[in-house]
Length: 606
Ligand SMILES: [Zn+2]
Image (cartoon, rainbow, N blue to C red):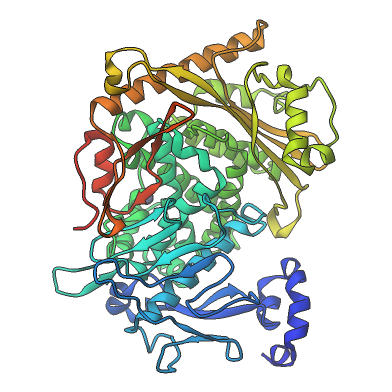
C-alpha cells in the first residue's frame, strides 16, 4: 500500500504499458490491479457456509477508461429487464476511490449485496477475471476478439424471469435471467460464478473461431459446451479457498470420486442445474455418447481434461515435499496452458474432439519439447482410452524418430510478409496452393491472422507465434427428397486450415479441413477421400436436421431476442446459396440441448 499511495496517476499511466512484464504482486502494489468483492460461488453457498461466501480480492486489471455501468474496454453492463421494461440505475465509478458505488453513495461490497448495482459489479468483475485468464501469456497470450462487429460485449444481468442464461452473438450480449426457488428465494444467475464463466466460455470460443457455428457436426456444438464447462471448472479451481476445501474434504486424494461429488453438490448445485465439477468426474468414452446430442457428448471431453488434471496433480504429489494442496495448485496452473493454448492450433471450421486432442498434444510438445516427465504419454493414454484418439495416432507419436510432420512449401515468403497483412498472407497461400492442398480454382480467403506471445512455466517466453487461418467455400448441391423444401438448392462446405509459424517462419502446426476437389498425386488423393467423407457427413446432417424440423428462422417476440424461440439451426441465403448455421445462442438450460436431437419447440422463459 505504501508504494501505491505514492504512485501518481501519471506514473500509473506509464506503468500501464509495462504491466504485462510485472507479476501480480508487484502490479497490485503499484495500483495496476484493483480488488473487487464478488460472490465466491453464489449466494446459496454463501448462506450455507459464510466462510465460502465472498471473494474479496478479485483482482481486475486497471484500465484508464473504467466508468459507470460498470463499463470497461471489453464489457458494458446494461441492466435492462425485458419482462418489466425497467432499466436499473448504473453502478457509479469513483476513480479516486477506485470503487463502484450505488445511487445512494454506498460502496458495493459484501455488505451491500441486495442492490442491483452490486449484481452489476459482481458479473462484471467475474468477467474481467475470465477475460484475463484467456488473454494472459499462460493462456492465449493475445487480446481476444469477439465474434461480432464491435469490441464490447453487452452484459444484461437481469434480462427477465426464467431459469436461464445465454450468450447471443446477434445481440452481442450475455444475458442472465432470474427465477424463484422452491423455498421462495429468488435466484439470480448473474450471481453464479460458474454460470457467468460457462457463458463467457462460449463468447470467447465464438470470438477465436467464429466459423464453428456454421458446422453441422454435433461434435462442434459439443466442443462449445466443453469450452463453457472447462472455463467454469478451471476458474473456480483457481480460487484458494475453494481448492483448500476440496483438498481437505478428499483427504488429499483428489481421485476420490465420491467425496469430490460431495463437494460439487455443495458448491455446484446451488443456482445451476449444471454441476460442472461432478459432471467432469466421469469415465465416459466416445462410444457411450453416440447420437446423444452436443451437451451429453461434451462430457466425454470435459471428463478427459479433468482426468488429465488429476493425473498431473498425482504426478506433482510424487515429490514428498509437496503437499496435496500445492500439487493441486501446480496442476491447475499448468492446465491453463495445457487446455487453453491449443485453441490457437484448431482448424477454422468443423472442429472435432480429435482436432482438439491433437492440438493439446502438439501445444505440449511446443511448450515442453523434452518432456522429461512423460506428460505427453499420460495425455495420449487418456485420449486413447476415451476413444477420442485411436491406436494409430498413438503409434505414430510413440515412434522413436517421431517428428511433427513438416510442411514443404513451394515458394518462400518471409514471415514478415506473411504476417504483415491479410493480403500478404493470401499471396503466400496462393503461391503454395499445391503444397497446402488448396484447389486451384477455389477462392481461398484469410479468415484470421494474428500473433501471440505465450508463456511457459515460470513465465518463460515461448517464441512468438503467428497464426494464419484460411478458408474457402465449396458448393454442395442438395439433391434428393430428404432435403424437403430445400431440394435442388445448394449449400456450402467450409474447407481450409490453420498454420502456426514461429517468428522465423518455421511451421509449428498445420491442421486442415479438406474439400472434394484438387490435383492427382498421392497427397491430393488422400485429401480428396477425406473431403468426400466430410461432404457426406454434411449432407446427412443437413437432411436429418431438415427432417426432424430443427431448421427454422428465428421468430422474434415482443421481447425481441430475449424471449424468442430460437431454433437450433437457422438457414439464411447468401448469393443464392443456403447457409445452415447453428444458433449462436448458447443457453444454460438443459432443455435446449435435447432440442438438438428431438426438434421439439422450446421456450427460453420458464
Ligand atoms: Zn452452454
